[in-house]
Length: 396
Image (cartoon, rainbow, N blue to C red):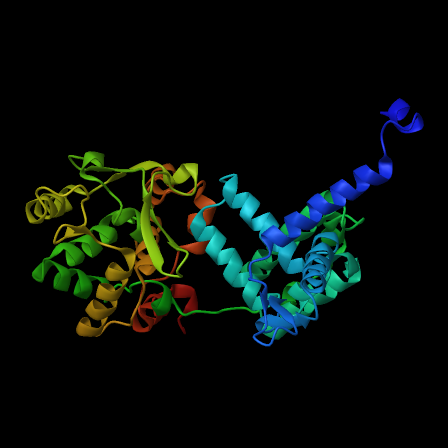
């Protein structure tokens, strides 16, 4: 190559021109809008993407000039992309490599659209470490984020700017930026919920279970099964009959939701739960094995345990039914996840072996169950009665 250039055999200027023309054709080919001549023949027009309005029209006096404008636009985008553009490069890459599910993709995209509005349109090369810290702390305060929500924000910021560093668009390490950032625990919004909001209380659970047993159909039986097994609602609606044997339900699947290209929600069964601990064998108490037999009788030829009219029941149907059951029984309205918290509290209150608890719940350790699932299910009068009978708390 060097000899060819020095001897004049290879014309560098010619090669550079060829490369430039190829690049020009690439930019014009990727341009998503048509280029057209006005009716009067005086101008050429097209659209270019616009962050605020989606797109905007531009015009030039010649076809070459309009194409030059298009090439200039896409060249600037390639050389100095926005935070938003790098976000989608990072996100699409993770999905393509199967590092995340489509449901996670949708959740990340929703969070990005919510938090990164103006910041997402910044040229990433102009964003400093201080800009990142200011953005995160401002978002924390403006939206009143919980610790978990702030952690989700950190995930997006970290992913975007780590990708930017690999693309050599920035020269600082987002890892160090994050480690240097100081956020007080007091800055996070604390969500305090009463026990009756988080679990079915001692006087509520029998009411609901009695109603479910007296009004048996696929949905009510499924909800009742959750009360006695602690299964997640996504696991319940994804159990194939091939995973049911006697009083054992093999948890190997869960439901995932994502949006298709038209923005429509799609519900699918995913083969593996989120964590290894989620893959487990759940034992149905002997007094409730009849639920499995009844479900089989209602659905003798279906692939899944939870099917109605030949169609697999979805999580949102279970959630809607539970709300209606709560309303009809006069119980404070709760989600299916509160059934799971109720089950965990019952096991802990009865001093069940901790290994068995983690196995039934699908948790990696007992700490998760104790910290996030254990609630006092007694009503206030019952709590007062217990305290009133403590000798040290009684007047002489």
